[in-house]
Structures are given as C-alpha cells and as structure tokens.
Amino acid sequence: MISKERLDFLKENISGKNIVVIGDMMLDAYFWGAVSRISPEAPVPVVEIDNEFFRFGGAANVANNIIHLGANPIPIGVIGNDQYGEIFKDLMEKEGISPETIFTTDDRPTTTKIRVIADNQHIVRIDKEVKADLDTETENLIISFLNDKADEIDGIILQDYNKGVLTKSLIKSVSDFAKKNNILITVDPKFKNFFEYKNVTLFKPNRSETEHAYGIKIENEEDLKKAGFRLLDDLKSESVLLTLSEDGIALFEKGEDEFKRVPTKARKVADVSGAGDTVISTLTLALASGGSLVESAYLANFAGGIVCEEVGIVPIEADKLFNQVWNDLK
Image 1: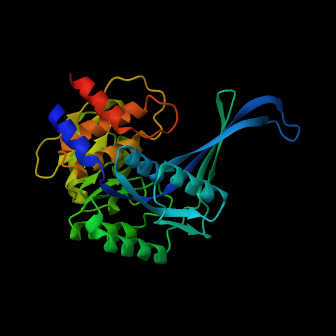
Image 2: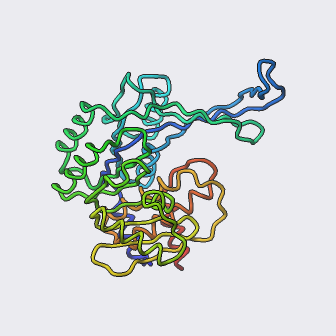
Image 3: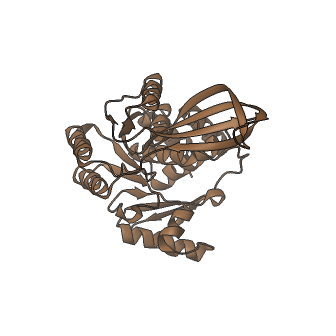
C-alpha cells in the first residue's frame, strides 16, 4: 500500500500544514463515582461523584487530532457563553489550539455530552445542545475569515454532527470558496444536509449514512459499487471514501470504472468513539501533504484502528502512527 520512503515523505510534509476545521464544536464531560444507595425521591441510584474530566468532542476532536499529528488546526465553530464554554477554552489553551475563530454566543449553549459512570457502568448521558441553524452574521464572519486567510490554508474539513453550524448556505459558500481558491476540501457528513456537499475533493460517509440517504441496504459488493458511484455522480465530488466498519474502506474516484478496497487491520477493539474524527483528520492531512487517495486512506484506516484500542476519545500521535504503519509493512 505504501513504502517507507513515502511514509517519511508524508510525515515530513504533514508538519506545519494549516487545516481549517468547520463544524460542531463539542465538549465531552465525564463524571465518575460510586452507587451505594437508591434515592428516596425516586427509584434511581444516587451517584457520589469522586472524579470528573473533560475532553474535546465533535469537530473539536478533529482539530485535536490534527495538532497531535504535528499540523496546525484552525477550528471554526460556536460555543456558548457558559461554564462549559470556559472549560472548552481552557482545553484549547492546554492543547495549544488558537481560539481566534471560536465564536461565543448567548443564543446557544456549548454543546456538551455529559456521561455519568458509576462502578464501571454507564448510568446516563445528558445532552446539552441547541440544533438551530447558525445565524447569518456568524456565517458571514466565517467566510470573511476564509477570504482573508486563503493563501495560508492547505485544506478544509467540514465536520458535521447536525448541531446547526453547517447550514446549507454555509456549506455552499465554503465549497465555492475552496473551489475558487483550489483548496482541498473533505467532508464527514451526517444525515441532515447529506446531499448539500457538492463539488468537494472527498466525501466520507459511513455505510449506515449512505443506506439512510438512499433508502437501501448495502449487503454485497455489487450494492457497494452502485452506492459508491451513485454518490460520486450525485455529489459531483472528486472522490468518495465509504467507511465499512470491520470491512474496512471502499474508495471511489471520478473517472474510474472500479473501486478500491482498503481492508481493516485485526485489532482488539476497546472503544470506537472518536475513530471517525481520527480518520478524517489523518486522511485530509495526508492528502494535503501529497499523498495519493490510496496512501492517504491506508494511513487514515490504520490511525482509526489504533485509537479504537484506547478507551475513550483520544487523539492519534504522529510518531505512534508512523512507527506502527512501518512495523506492519516490514
């Protein structure tokens, strides 16, 4: 799939790349404790919290992966003027990520997923969010920033979690901007606005998103081929990368009659959380650094497998990724 020479080339070129990440910035909150009694107010456990910690989620996790791979993320999104927004900004400072284009608003809270875990069991998840579309004023600020920084941008990732930041109008404006300035643009979609992402460099849905979008089931190679090339044609994208969980990745390129497969590596899976964020981060950086679609997909697939071995959402480290890929190729 890839040579040691090409690995060294990509690792060197990834360093310092400027990658814009536009999407739903999220915070993951974890409250750990123990249960020793049932509440007298209702038949529910009382969790006595003895530890709490916070991690980046959503598009923020994509930005975090990029900085850990040695590149420069430029995250663009919205947080609330609230306690969790302050925690989010503290995390950014800790990781060395610039908050310049993280807009604070009174109109919506910081999107936060609160997980309560007791005695090694997930008790409940509480979602704090507003899914209303982003306001036009903030959209205009985003486009203005992109225009000002056009010469410094090596790639753009649109990371959609259906929380309202990536509106139809913003998607079109950013796509037009990327095309006009010949900038690489990749997309990690969700169900809403699935077909709005036209004329991009690479579109990365998973199997279930594709099945949902077309009302089909992908059960064999022929189903897969039809779905992938249909996406390529409908979206007018240069390429489609369809993730298939344990079945690896399928690659579709404009002008090709057949698709390519990148198999997954057999691994001990501990937690799949955040693996998709790692894949789009690694993939975009590799493409921006001169990697071919197959090379970039191979590297991204490997990176996703590595983070699945970890519990919780963790970023991929450049040295660990490239060393493990090289060891696997020996």
